[in-house]
Image (cartoon, rainbow, N blue to C red; front, top):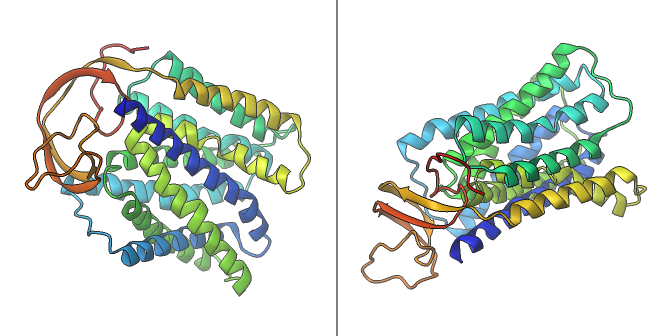
Length: 354
């Protein structure tokens, strides 16, 4: 039961991340009339990082002690996702119509899942693949503009390169997802944001007035900061491919909000809703069960003692269900129960279980 609860929490975190990010898209689009795209990206990331660090300061959150082995994946996630991805996207968008770019941006979810399955050997099965395919197809239908223009190979390659960078970012972030999610999101925003701001200003962008600046800050905090915290939580609980699939419904949320604000309801939104709904249902009803072995490991993260994987002894005792954080050791154990490729289930599979 505890694993099903954990998976549901992971699914809700992934979908919540998509809702917040997708809802921010129509607002961010309005801001593009006053702010250049690259500068806006820098403002969004910077605002999210500063807000999350302020939140941690107000809450007096405990200091994070990042293990030496976690530094390379975190640094790689920041470089690929926060610096290279936006740069490649801007290079591509500057030389190609939005019709082609909107379709190509769906490749992020595909790259995320493929890297998780092929490179990191994340567990999957036919049900998960089918659900992911339906969600991805819904995203394609939603972004299909009718007449698609790409304007050459290199601009399209740049946009696809950006999607690949974000796919790498998602998989690298998953390697450190047990680290405090607010701290990870704050670091990514505080590093990537200023880098993009400097690049935008060097290339001639100018800062907007107070109202657009405050609007960008608000969107950054909600649609980038809080959304990223939820996405990292989903990575830790359900794995990269599944979290990426949930996140892929963000365009549908944005389109739905646009309809609520007065845009006409078109057939792509209806078809996308059916496809994405079916895909999410396949993921939520997944039952992955087999005998597996947990190797001994010592690490630190928030946990409770009622999830079947944290039964170590405390002095004084900690009641079941109370979240707490400290360095602890998992003893080797072999057992069978429903589970997902979360941060405690990265074991290999001889074959897919359905």
